[in-house]
Length: 267
Length: 254
Image 1 (tube, rainbow over the protein chains, first blue to last red):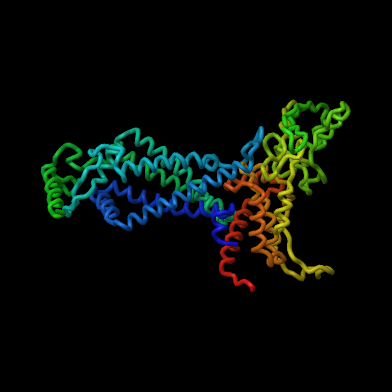
Image 2 (image 1 turned 90 degrees about the vertical axis):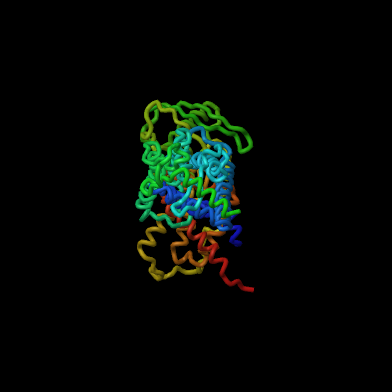
């Protein structure tokens, strides 16, 4: 039997694709959260990190296209499996009770759709940068004087909008819920789940999902409580008298100067 | 005791069906659900009405013939029993009980509560067998099998093929049935020669029959009258993947 037939046509193969694409996407969201948590340290940290990612050029595009392909496969096969499942029972029961299916497992489609809507908005917001005016996408300079995108301020500005924060919390909450079923399911679909360690697996997965949610929620709480605040004087509307290595603030003049120098260098 | 039945009545596979209500009076709580249906049918026959058609055979929970969705759960409210082992004492006096046939595209309703489960036979024909030397019996214990393996294979072998797994699954997936049948043989030495072709062929037959896909919710295992573990589904997935990958590198005869 052809391996492509097995993977793309058979019922088990489609589930394997769901599992494999799911693992990749799980790895991505964990990496993404780790990157985001840098917001709690000096603004230069996350700004330099974002600058590094942007400067990858073709490699960045390769990663983006790979992730897009993975997301498309995950959704495509989810849709295909759902349609097949509907066809498998065209006439339902008058009465059917749920015996042990978890709530999260029964609403995977809905949590998935909300997360997809969030991802689309998120990319338009921060990658395409078209949801807000230019004031939402400031520039800053690193300690070495390089002019970079001020991702730190972009994030803080974003979370200062309560509507966006609520949407964000709902989305990562639903994603954690989605993962709670998805992560255990991966092991089942790949044939690695056994009774011996199912209990431990479910607990570890639940812990990972709760930690994932708390990690994301911490950023919102950090911004809302004022713990994480804008330190770019051009955005904050105040000017420090000196460049400050403690809070990461730079004088407005220093940023303007640096921007001009880097423009000169480019021309 | 007295209960009211809401029973699905359907003349044949082509006709549209509908629910009919019947009062079942003067019941003994220790009657089985099927015996209660017998009593209702007797009254219906006396009145000249068509009795309710339902599938039954051994009436001791080992043949897998009886198949009813009783109040939203295959085989009724109790766990680990078939319809024939469900007793009226599991219900309260005055209950309204909804009785429906098992449903799914691969399980067309033939009449009233009887579902055509021929798709299971097709899956069995595809790989639910072993090749063995015919003739006189082998010596006892000539083929050693470890106790834990024998026990696990016995768990899978307890499947009576009733179809409750398909009926309970919101996707009408037959994964628990196929995994039990394939798993039982794949665990034992007698099943090794066809191990790979068995899983590939049985899964192909399952897909072809129009069963849905597993969404790992394990309603099947909870509804199974033999409480077969969903662990066998994991094993089926594993055996299927191994067989597929092995097939890539296997030398083929000319």
